[in-house]
Every structure is written in structure tokens, then in C-alpha cells.
Length: 179
Image (cartoon, rainbow, N blue to C red; front, side, top):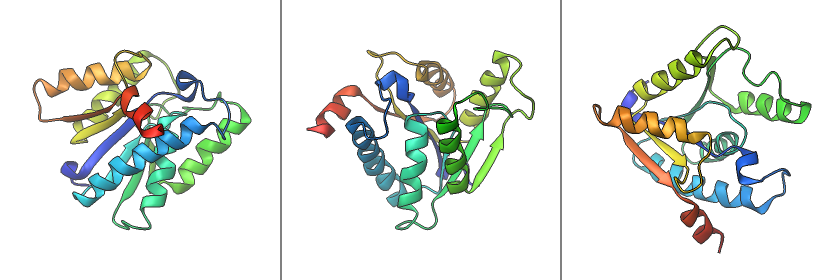
């Protein structure tokens, strides 16, 4: 896997966007923005998209990459969980979403092969992602903090000493895309 052709996609969790139903129109807006951005990156030679398997933007990105593979068969999808039992405490519906995502992925692995033990596993996961990607595509807006804030801050710190592209899709972009 050539690091120069690998990006990480993340962003808001479903609940952070107040999305609680599969037919929420916000999901389609996010997917449309992701499709536009990922298609452009695929045109530029993107080969791998990595996600951590979080509910929300990341699992929607899985669906978009699966669709784009029809146009870009060289595009691959990896799910890198931070620890071995990631998502095991989710309800049945969310477990099904996780299983479907795993079926769509070309590669599924956990950075830590242990069940969750401490926040250091999350830090190690972030460091692994940063060291194995050339950049990230985040649906995140600093004016509307969420869990992605921690990855975004770590990516900015990493960027201070390494070439690393951070592409942010703000709430304004999402709003404009929905009109």
C-alpha cells in the first residue's frame, strides 16, 4: 500500500448530527459531499480509503466507496478499528451496519488486538492512521465541536512536522450542498 495514495475519512457521529433514522435527509447530503470529494481524489490517483468504523460519516463513507468502486475498480477500502472489541456494545441495528461495512471492505483489522483497556489504544490508533496516510478528509467544523476534534487536533500537530493534507468540509459547505 503506497502511503501517498491513502487517505483517512472521518467526521461527525450520527448522534452529533442529530441523525437517528436511516431516512434522515442529512445523510444524503453528507453522502453527496463525500461522493464529490472522493470521486475527485480517485481521479487524482487515490487507491485506499481508511475509516475507523464509527457510526455516522465513516460508515456512510464506506457505502460511498463501495459505489465508487464501480467507476474506480482500483479503489480499495480499509476499516481499522482502534481495538478488537470495537462496536461490540452497539445495539443490534448498529451491529448490522458494522457487519455490512465489513462485508464491503477490502481489509478489516484492529490496530490493537486487545479489547478496550485504556485511552492509549485510541492514541496509538490515531498515530497509526497519521503515519499510514497522506491526508484526511474530515466532515468537521470547529464551530460545532464533536469527537472528531481529537483526531483533527492530532492531525494538525502531526502536520507541523510532516507533510499531511487536512481537507475539512464545514457545516457551511454541507448547508450549501443541501440547497
